[in-house]
Image 1 (cartoon, rainbow, N blue to C red):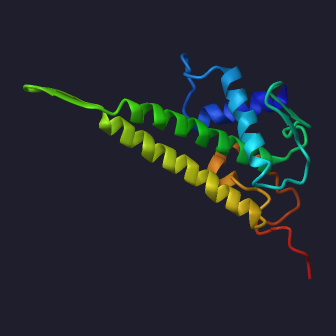
Image 2 (image 1 turned 135 degrees about the horizontal axis):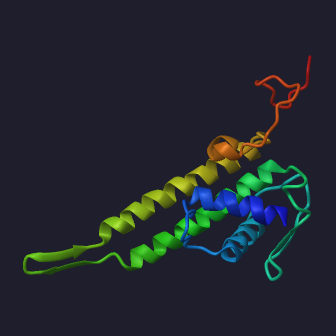
Length: 165
């Protein structure tokens, strides 16, 4: 269950759902990760052929044991985008303004903040996907930051899988 541990932790960190009372259960986040992986199969070609089962909530082979950091990063960012979109939709449905005399309640600002948050996270995903498609095999590494597991053993910091001359 390595992908569940690593990717759920990463997703919780990205959407800021850590702490003593998280909003999402681990099983819910695993479901979102599997759905994100399934959606990505049509958009991105990875070096490994992953079998994704939404019903069984599984990804095989395990991308974390195979060190497929691009897959892990992109799927986690896509899952974060899906969650952010869901949260924005919920808040948009509750974006009301009520005024009764001198008293007022205005929840439109919450929806606007959720929209900005969603746009930021989904923009991060779009940039990471574009990087991967353009040949950066470490897509999302600069966005996810602390989860950059790439090890530059014996490589220069400027190495981008270019042939040596």
